[in-house]
Structures are given as structure tokens and as C-alpha cells.
Amino acid sequence: MVSYWYLIFAAVLAFAFGVITMRRRSSTKVIWEAPPQTGAAHEAAIADPQLLAFIQQKQLIDAIKRYRELTGVGLKESKDAVEALDRSLSGT
Image (cartoon, rainbow, N blue to C red; front, top):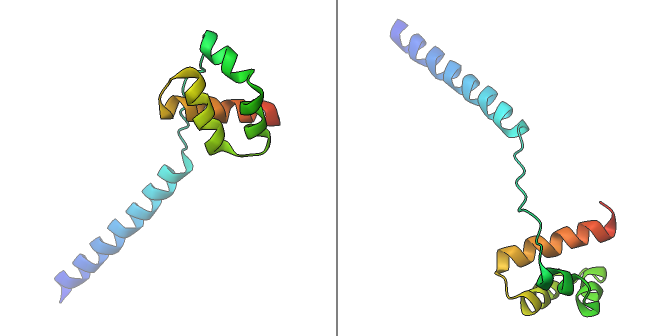
């Protein structure tokens, strides 16, 4: 019977250690942001009135599609560029 108490104690101790470890891990946030786009195609795209209208109307999917049409970059790069432009225009 005594060995069961050791087993229960070890299980509770392991559970408590896991909870403490997860709390520490969840409070640490890693934020990665892609480097900003540069180049003539990017400069022309961010000056496009249709792209700016999509962003101001919060139609980000259409804005990403438009950015891809104008620059020819991939989906991830377009999404990052449009989100960065949205943040800069909204001031946050």
C-alpha cells in the first residue's frame, strides 16, 4: 500500500511541474515579422489607388490579390506586405 502512495505522489508532482512549465512557456511570446518589401514593384503597388481603397475598406483578401497582381510575389510575401501597409495606414 505504501508504494501506491509514492506512485500517486510522483504523479501529482509531475502534473504540478507540467502546469508550472506550461505557464512559463505560454507567457513567452515570440513574434517574427518578415523583412519589409522593397523595390520598384513594391513602391508602385503601394501607390496603387485600388490597393489603398481595398485596405481602407478592410478588404484584405482583395488587397492581397491586387498586390500579387501588381508585384508578382508569393502569397506569404503579399500577405505580409499588405498587413504591414494596413498597420502603417491605421497608425498601430
